[in-house]
Image 1: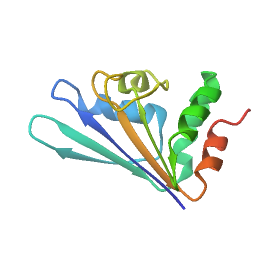
Image 2 (image 1 turned 180 degrees about the horizontal axis):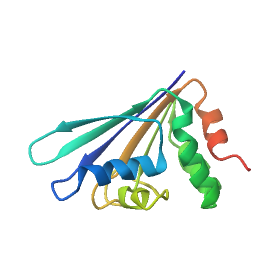
Image 3 (image 1 turned 90 degrees about the vertical axis):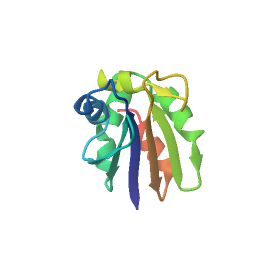
Length: 130
């Protein structure tokens, strides 16, 4: 079992396609939905395949951040779930910067939640040596 779901706020000053590109630069094989709210909106995305994390895994290895990502993600495992946040601007540039839900991503973070049968194994897979 694997299910990835996420959300990212789209501010009035942001281009919807650029926000979508930020998510697609670090994750793949996603289904997107946009929910309009008052002056802003929320982009929701989902995937049922672990393959959606292949870009994420490649960037972690390429940017030499395996240990930091492993530590960060393992600390956020709750039962069969991992929940973490990415800096939206850094993701748009094709890199990964894990952040807190508030304050570290001025335009708001990308929120990701993964449900799977073995979250620890998934973190090990994402951060394994080449």
